[in-house]
Amino acid sequence: MSNAVTLKKSEFARASLGDKIFLLIGYILLGLFVLAIIGPVVYIVIASFMDPITLQNRGIVFEPGKWTLTAYKRVMTNSQIWIGFGNAVLYSVLFSVISVFITLLCAYPMSRDDFKGRKFFNAIFIITMFFGGGLIPTYLLISNMGLLDSMWAVILPGSFSVWNMIIARTYYRGIPNELREAADVDGADELVFFFKILLPVCTPLIAVLILWQFVGMWNSYFDAMIYLNSANKQPLQLVLRAILIQNEPDPGMIADMQSTAQRAQLAELLKYATIIISSLPLLVMYPFFQKYFDSGIMIGSVKG
Amino acid sequence: MNAKTRVNKLHNTFVYVKQHWQLYVFFLGPALLLTIIFKYLPMGGILIAFQKYNPFKGILGSEWVGLKYFQQFLSSPDFMQYLVNTLKLSVYGLLWGFPMPIILALLLNRIASSKIKQKIQLVLYMPNFISVIVLCGMVRILLSVTGPLNMMLGTGINFLTIPKAFRPIYIASGIWQGAGWASIMYTAALSNASKELKEAAQIDGANIWQQIKAVEWPAIKDMVVIQFILQAGNIMSIGFEKAYALQSDMNLSSSEIIATYVYKKGLLNGDYSYSTAVGLFNTIINVILLIAVNKVVEKLNDGQGL
Image (cartoon, rainbow over all chains, first blue to last red; front, side, top):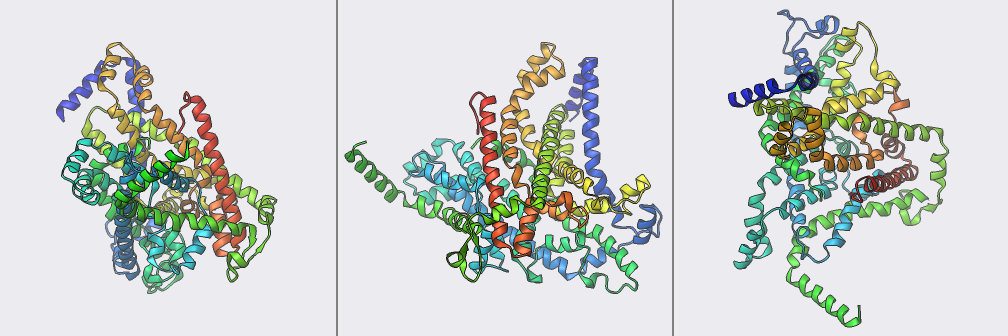
């Protein structure tokens, strides 16, 4: 660390005046961008502990007595939020596991030069990246299949990702051929080779794909909005949408307030706590995946 | 090719498939099945764009109306408005949003301390893990009449009801959320660019601007081109989720885009055929755009496209 800093200093010190100005402006811009990201988040965090009336009239003030945990208590004891959490976990886990498994399987033959029909299948898959039936035909199909209000309507249609297949295929191709040849000598069949030899050396790929798919499902709401009607099947994002966008929190959360004005203020405050509680799981988790990001994105950026 | 070699080839294929049936059944099978069911079957459903579709009669029993719905929406001023909204939103979004990750990556690349760099990256990536709903919820809070922005300005403007404010809000929040994440791949490519080359450039007395031109830009140029094609080609497929979550009754004149219009017309009003026709029109423009952009890039890039 100290080494890197001294190196930086000396590099900066050695730079010409023009370069120094250039670097300084660059660092300031970067710093402003970082502040612009942190600012709103910090505001929401602090505001979530504020007394709603004070917040509305005076903004954030640092006076003891104006702080409260009311919003958190109400959000944490609301069953709809927890149902949403449970559903979001269920859908996201199922989706990411199924999706990545199918994608990894498919990418294997597609990565082999000797695979007959590769070009044909490739064309079939690629076409779907650019052309599709669109919203209504897909909706009618799901409806005809009897999948309305079923979680499979949300999980299955998008579970095979052509883009991820191309990424996995490229990754497989980067694996040394010796591995394959060693397996051939042993007479391993395709399934054994795939599960016992190929997958174990693909951990970074699998981690990145699982993360992408999980986050993608966790954060989306459109499919759930059009396919799921029952309240007990709604994923978190739909519950959040009611609170944050439609201003219609679960009545149980605010019903005990006397006046409409009080209810409105409380509903407003609930938004802050809801944002924090619902975003926390992913925000806590993602730093642990950071080491995979760079390698993962490099995999992704390689031309298919 | 004569008949004999053709038979031979067929025979070889047959032998190959028989030997490697696992590849077709276990490996390719599930993906192919999902693709056929959820991607190709709906393509058949496009036919209802040319019908007066009646859900009870189905595609086979519904009356054919030719291009009636296409004529209907192409002559409607509302539709033209939504088409323009879609184009403006994504073109401006691309122009403002595309350079940001590249600039961020170039700046990050100039930070020598890897620890500091990592901390900054952690912050830059963070918004990517916030959902669209939460992002739009935050935007609504920060810009609300009693929110912090109005408090700072000493005003009481409800930004989300102003049509003119919709695009800047949409694009700025998009950069806030996505620019850091999109910079990863440029950062990775830059850190792979040979350090020695950069040192050589420094010894030659090149200033930073010259180094960027000689070393860093060549390292990411291909990636920039590919990303630009992909994004320009997807101009018409701008997402539903965020636009819908930032809409209010008052800002519809600029926030209603084709994706939200198709949803409202089709699923909320039940105009299946009309809505499918609009969707199909959108897809076709998208495909044409993608081909055109690819051709342009091929010309600029010494015959290399996607």
